[in-house]
Length: 357
Image 1 (cartoon, one colour):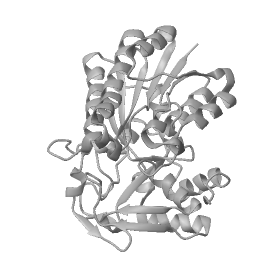
Image 2: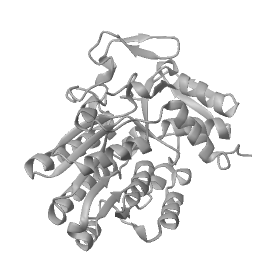
Image 3: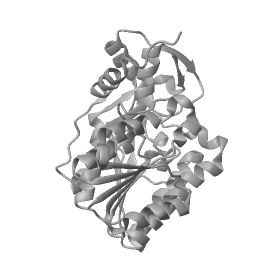
Image 4: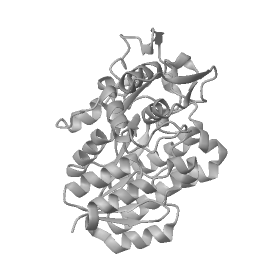
């Protein structure tokens, strides 16, 4: 028996990874205690996704309601499966800038401490397993905001002659920059994953994600850009725009394309690998551009409210380069772009996201 262990298995990337690796013939063990509900309220709960996984996958999926901060609970799970675990996909996290400021202890304990707990259990119980960590482009802090940007009609764009014109590379410094409390806890996790790869010769990868998205997102205001845009449009909610004239740019990568990258690493793992992973030049948009696509899909205008002040540490422009990953894994290809992503989100939720009376 070969086991894939997925933390945060009820979330967007976690649930996609569960289905993907079960489809490859692995037995999947998922760890998720629905902290997303605690972070963001009932509408962000992942319980619905866990129920769907258990009903659809049957015996291929075993769910563990455990907290990654609980060392004893984690150790019990890892001891149970031991060296049968061939891959660990670590997606569990506190994912919000805004929430982290409210409770820095919980943010750091989940993101940094929880990651260390998972790493140490891999080291002790299944050291040959591939370890895949969902990091974030927020490890670069607000340094991308120092890039030479040009204002266009619907977006900010980088000077076309800049070395990052095709996307920001992993050589961007993470030092002397404002990270946010959330970004700092993710830096700690990211560096620890690299350290276990180098120091203990483990097979680890940090995937520094751009905007990860897809129809399985439990969209809420504080986390889930494209899904929340579509949800606001469909439910007739007001979408709050924070600064930069709504022209801030994000690259967006569908969860399907993300887990295909995970599979590529699993089949040919390296030690202490670090990759930016996002929509790149293939899939990106500003907020204004996302609104326009959502309106075209639904036939309804967005309801928006503009606030001049941007969120602290928020990126004015982020398009990452996938070149490093594609150099190591040339068979990996992106499929989804922003219009495809938004349409799929719409179709998956058309009977659920309806205007509230």
